[in-house]
Image (cartoon, rainbow, N blue to C red):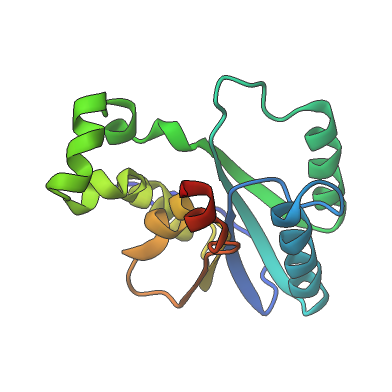
Length: 169
């Protein structure tokens, strides 16, 4: 198999930062929290490779506003390496209403968390950018996509989870 690594200038650490939206000082909590985290990491001399796993839901992504946020990230030396539509998971695309219902009656790991199938995409990025650690922030798709990646330190943070029970009621 061909080695897909690219030559990169090393800082003291290469970090793959995985999240569900474009980090920014504007927007919602996910945008602001991730911007602050990335800003801190860059100030510490960490080289950031950003992976966004987002649900496009038929909308144009990135919007003009999000495009300007991405420009701000590039100016801070944060490297956007990929944007993945969370619906890209084969399992997620193929979930019928019946299967969706059965995921709660007869739960299987890959049906409950179809984003597990994105693990190989994450591993490819880890190898390509010589990543030392993974920091996943905010969302279920990112947690699932990075959860089973082995041989590398990971910090998986799922933000704002307490709103889910209330929304369900």
